[in-house]
Length: 284
Image (tube, rainbow, N blue to C red; front, side):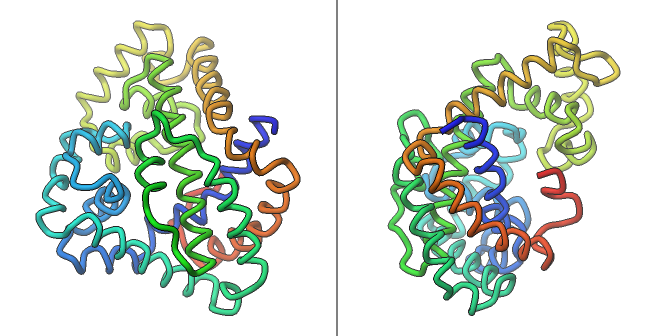
């Protein structure tokens, strides 16, 4: 399958996975175990499949977050709740969120069951060597309900692609904060203020990393990508598509197209029903 088409398909399906990071049902389930709200619930719920890991492991695999921010929440989360309990809470919350956003009739439909089967076929073809987040999620038992099978499969596909994206960024010689700065400069990501606030980087840290990118001729002092910087970002995205193509090769172009057709109305519904804050996935 063409890597660019595979990447476009993966990005189109991503909202069905990502809604779990914004759903109040997930936060309620995870914080009900004693985990801190907000980013505490996010760091814990996404990293829990890796087990009782430290903040350094979470920061390394999530890549663009300030390690000092992660350290505020991990490993403290594991003092409040066992990772396996956090995993179970996450899936309970996701199930409730999907029920609210899509309705029981849709979740029980033949279309969702078919989408789950197709997505699982792709997800089970994800190579996990060198991909820690994907590998951790692949070790989890598959859910039984079709809508949770679909969510789990999409999560595996997302983490497989994300692990590959981190590899591409490292190969390009970009640190986590440098990846964030250059992505922000493309205009397809956060604003600088949002990037710093959500990822935990100070003005001084941002300025220091920007200066390093300027010295490498990747950015201007006005925080714009140079010709070299744009080429570097495009190369990263191209490699990300290439590194993520294996599960889509296994599914095949016809299977990927059918999965997209089945999931497109689901994505439209969750977005229309307020799954995300304004602006999230607006450019997808």
